Length: 256
Image (tube, rainbow, N blue to C red; front, side):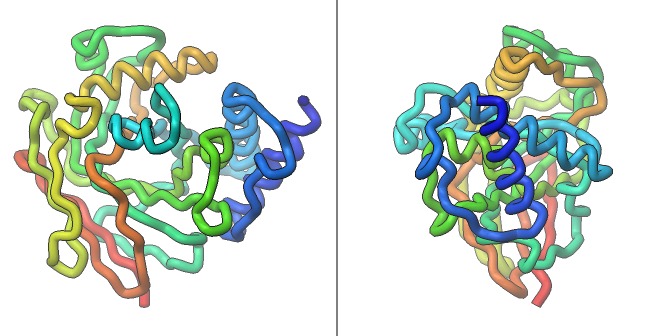
């Protein structure tokens, strides 16, 4: 399968870099979820070889409804690089994406490495700061259709992220109200409790799942906890803001 891993990773890499839609990999190739993560890792290695560097990871399928919808019993994760970071208050060009969507999140900044199964308390002890955040997801598959193996191979749809002001991790984040606005109008309203019942559980899960793939969450890395609501489709000219109770807000715009 190693040759197929390389071939599939190159297809995904080209689609990500060139913002081009591709057919589902699973339509022509049969591969397991474990192999999908190998495709993801290989495609990110190609990005690193081109000059990018790792800055963290993101969690996906962090709500029970999403797991049921996708027919899976666990979350998924993807890798973050420096070129995925969109400056708070900055602007993106929609031509750099296939069909981008955005979802409100919470981000963690780690002060110590994390690896392996941990309690939420142990995971929380590694947190330097927390922040309001958003993730831009952009499945490269035609018509936004994919299997779970497809989406994992495609870096779990991760394409960009926005981080707001960092705050000390001394507040209770179990049930923070979250409002994502388009042009000042609320389009998604939710709570941090939607992230696995408590977003700290997502951090512990991140440590477990990356360790299963032989990785360690490094000090200084950012971890995105997962979407608190459904994602909203982006379009030219829209301004987007996510406000998290007690943490502040982050924003970006899409160029016209």
